[in-house]
Image 1 (cartoon, rainbow over the protein chains, first blue to last red):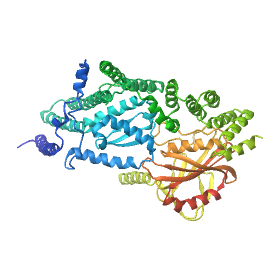
Image 2: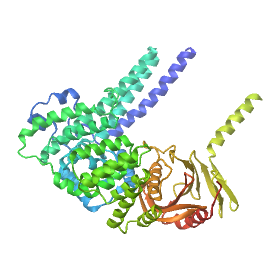
Image 3: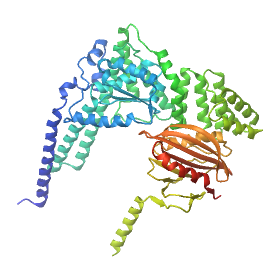
Image 4: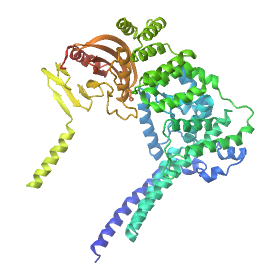
Length: 428
Length: 190
């Protein structure tokens, strides 16, 4: 007769075997869908990526012709399940209050996506979102989001294409599916190990170590996907003769902006989903330097880009300074000022950040930038109203009256004209 | 017996934690945030926050009438913005009507509303205080179009602020008339 302790172990073993047999059924279930062999080469590790030294090697590694981006999979498959989730998400995106519907802007960005995506373009549905962060993503079902923060921070078409190319790399390689399968495999192994450790009476800490190893493996897989997407992004830029320095430039400024905004916390290379930013920037630059000599001309598309983005820049900036902390807004504005495009608008928003801040010297600081805005090109008419408000809070009533007056002359039918006139009456 | 009492006490405590809405009954006068005396026609559901009291007829996603506690000089209108890195806007004594739209935009952003557009600004009253009325449209991240109005007044260097919003097509016509009447007829207690 087994002792109570062994009876319990036997019961546990049977229950676990039952649970794992359910997983085994799942495995068959997965294989109804996309087989791993159809995903092309396995993801590149950091060491493998670092061993690429010539242009033909890069082009061979990030081949485009063997890729098969997803056609709608059967609902019976695991991939079908991810598509179902993506479809549900797309319904929310389609009706989101953040959606920017401007036709000209949408047509322009879709054009860039189609240039990169080539034959896969019909499967991509673009949604430009008014969200003040540098980001874009392409979901498994082709739902593509481009955030206003990315449009604002890209300096030219090549930089926007660099980020879109990276995201398209994830899409082409079906990284969502690969990641989910890897997570399931790793967690199944960890469960099996935990059982073995329990039955074999392994030391208590060994299970924790196994869990750590599992998490580390999942995160390393994710980092390799990011590296791989970087490589495919670069390849797509190369195919479309875009400036190959664009990806590393985007990264360089993102790192710089984070530092200026005080957001450059230390990154643990073992517990991060993405490789360290500096490493990515350096690697992208290295690969671009290898590939560049093989391209005769490289297109930045700066004029085209500015023509389409500048009409929307003020509204993007308004969201940034309303939603983001003061330090982050100033970091972004300073970087945009360094680029030197339509400086009057940028100085005006810098003034707004100070005027709306809780700081006691906010009005004084704001006035400095409003004055710069007026001297530069492209300041909006509202700069005179804001100057007047800052002057009013500093008890400079005559100057305030003068600037309110200029504002009304320039914008007599502004929505706040009646209130401005009331304010001027009160100043008499 | 002692265990049973302890269990009942803990259960009551837990259940009272769930019941964060209370009923504002139809008719009668209500003291709201110690600042406003409000007469109601219909009933409302009321919920208190650290910096405001929010009334709703059909749930906060569809309509809301928010009474903010008076804000002193140098204080923020919202102490606890929802899911936002940026803190709520700050009131400074001496602020003019022309600065109120910035405060409204800041509060609505803190409440996670998006695409806010102030469509009209008109001089108005809040109780016996001169106020600015701002009509606006906005959306949520999940899309319904909302419409609303706010009244803000700077009285004795304290900011008084009431905000109404509602889903534009169906609920605004249902709820706005009562919200209009409440905000137009309320009395200030201080």
